[in-house]
Image (cartoon, rainbow, N blue to C red):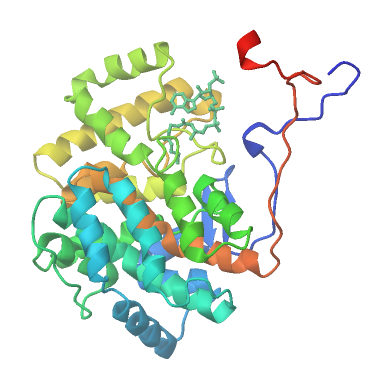
Length: 383
Ligand SMILES: CC(C)(COP(=O)(O)OP(=O)(O)OC[C@H]1O[C@@H](n2cnc3c(N)ncnc32)[C@H](O)[C@@H]1OP(=O)(O)O)[C@@H](O)C(=O)NCCC(=O)NCCS
């Protein structure tokens, strides 16, 4: 490519703005996060997942009557078509729950007469359906993969409470339901991260909402993104005892291995969600047992990582680091951590899609070609 000037490459699209949005503000320097202008700390303290879903989709907190109507709509959408339950049952025995979730969410389109209707009204309806049914799908995966009978949703229960009920077949304690709900609020939205971006890339081709969020789920699965939560817990389990932590972390860093649950493309300080989840974990007031051990290992690892890489490289705990022990406390198995994340992120993905479609433009970046030019085809016999 002699004579051509190399354009500036933005590897990983780092630092590139591709759209305007009024949904989420991530302040990576100060470690702050806002959904629709409300700080994550206030939402975690006072709101719940159904209300936050409304906020993300509509841009405003609902009035009392709007919230009642929204909860009713969400709860009416929890049921799953029998064929979807069949897919979950069939696939759960041999696939990771993220594969099953991806298949089941994509398959939902077949049961929605408006799957390809692109009006704002139809897309809002589909968003409510997707947020609601994603919770039921994740719960059903948890239930059916262990060979147990499907449990029908209970419309009297809150979103997270119903998920635990569908998973375990018994009503959860109010503490467990509140904890899971809080975790879902913390995971509901995070601006144009990889999965939201891929959702938007798909939607920007004017594909449908089911296909768009299926792209989001597929992207979330990766260990550099949502898949880090399952691996972070595995790391804590591999460390086994608090006194092994230093050796494990130092070995990982010497061998240039990523320590899962640390580092972030935007936060170069403590992730505010991780701070809240850390506090939740410490507030569990555990006397003994696995979660207490995991928490002690996590705190040691956190201290070491901050000493080694915090100030020097801006590598701090992210949302995925303290999540695992909290989920273990609630009784959620590691293979369901990332599906839980996906079910929690559904309102964020849908809100972004609805917003982007208001001024949609096909997303098509460039890559700088560095391959050969003008080559002549050589027939197979002469190669
Ligand atoms: C999230 C992540 C992909 C962001 O990466 P990024 O913005 O592309 O940053 P880079 O990969 O360029 O990393 C910058 C430097 O920090 C180091 N680093 C980043 N995350 C690290 C981690 N978790 N453990 C050890 N080192 C890490 C890199 O090795 C690199 O070091 P170098 O400058 O000596 O090469 C990265 O921090 C990571 O892999 N974290 C672990 C996975 C994870 O927890 N993901 C969930 C994110 S919410």
